[in-house]
Length: 146
Image (tube, rainbow, N blue to C red; front, side, top):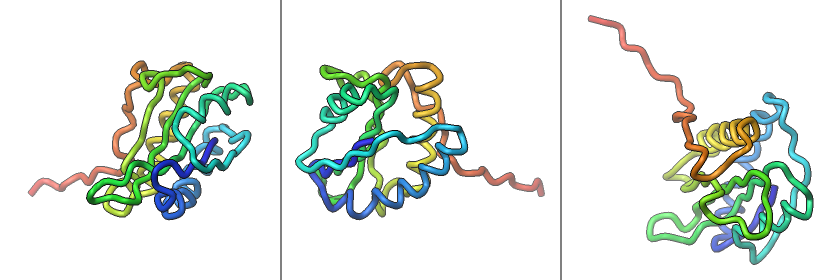
């Protein structure tokens, strides 16, 4: 795992800990351990590929501050890459983005990220080959017929 400031250190400071508090237990419940954690400044998404290759990681997750937009200057993104290596393209990654106060909560994002990690490891793929079919992670209310 790499935690990088990217283009919004505020996003990492505001949302990374909450996301990880929700994600780590989900992964542990699936028998998935986090190996190494790297904290990087001046980071970009592709840095995860190089770190993942050096560490021979099966799966790389990169938490990174996204480009500040008009309404979300503190948006966090998570990029996932199976068998990361230098030269990976965006088509080989999945992304869960818009993790911030008015977007995905840490719990909602952790649900999606855990699903992508679990399925990516099982199927040995990420990116365009792995569609997020996790749903939204919330229980649907069943209305009682009147």
